[in-house]
Length: 202
Image (spheres, one colour):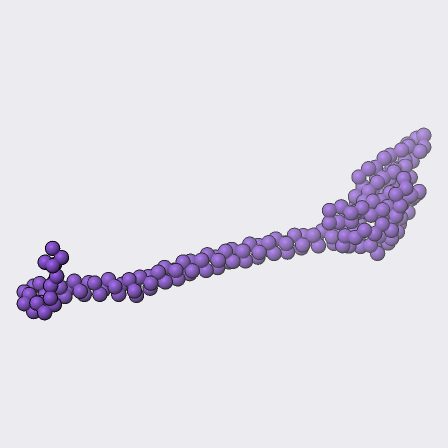
């Protein structure tokens, strides 16, 4: 049967034109398939790989853009918080202003004819990102004078907050009173560990 399938190429000239064109078309298709396998397919694979690389690069660029945007937002938030922090600190004294502030409080007491028996800063206490400076105050005088003194103390440019005020009668007719107060202010300086501004004595 194999002998029947063999043919001599010289016999192609005797084939009909239709058979010859069919053979030529078959050969063209075979050559085209070989060319597709050898050239077009690798090009398509390269193009697919290139598309994948482009997609990866685009994704990385988008991620970097998003990271840059988030970083800018964080920087803006930090700047806003820093500005608020600095604005808050302007209401509090610096370390070198603590002694003058005590003198100012003492002058206020004298203006209201009060007798100061204790007025001092105590040990600085770190609190979050601030330095809290406790204050001890003891004074005596007439009730209206004490009330006006407390009002003027609260109106000082630097915030001095009284958190524990105790009143005690020192005259039978209630005309003179004594106050013992604890308060505090914050330093407008950077956080540190100094504790030289006062004592912890009661």
